[in-house]
Length: 255
Image 1: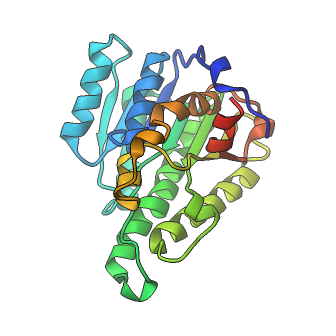
Image 2: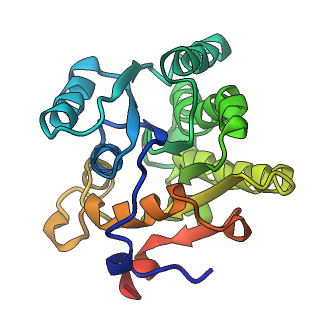
């Protein structure tokens, strides 16, 4: 799928739109939340730790951008009714939702499957697969009612090409790719509703520091480098592009 280069997307506007970002206190999530607010969106910032969300909130408010809302929820323990409560809160506070971006992630442990704990897999699958499903399902009525709505899943190369020792994390990300394809097929006849996946690849993030300790992260692109791509997917991209999984590193190289 040919995409516009990064330098052509710097003026993307999200005025009047309501955008929810899960994991908004993480490296990619916070960069995206700040960028969405800067470009005119009202951002719903989700995360597990309230004080970290408050720091993102303060940055947005101090910059004079649209006031965001904080949605704290621990995805490792969240139940179906919790996602329903999120949807009810969004409806009550904003009356609409134009985009949902999934960046929340849990790595779990890396190592041979025989050495990985069942409970750790359970927690990782809840955060990385069941929560995106539960959140998307709960918010779907609001997204379907929007004149132009987008859901974006953040994927991983280990989900696209599983390898030894990546365990529950790779399984969850592979499952997320399957969920994306299912949703794209189910939404094929809904012209205002799109879903896509982004595979950022190696970047300067806390997750990368966990998976590759000792690596010189300064040599990798910062999360901000991928923000224009996400903004493009959120801002009225053509329906024909729905369902695609985008290699963000390849996109960067051609920008």
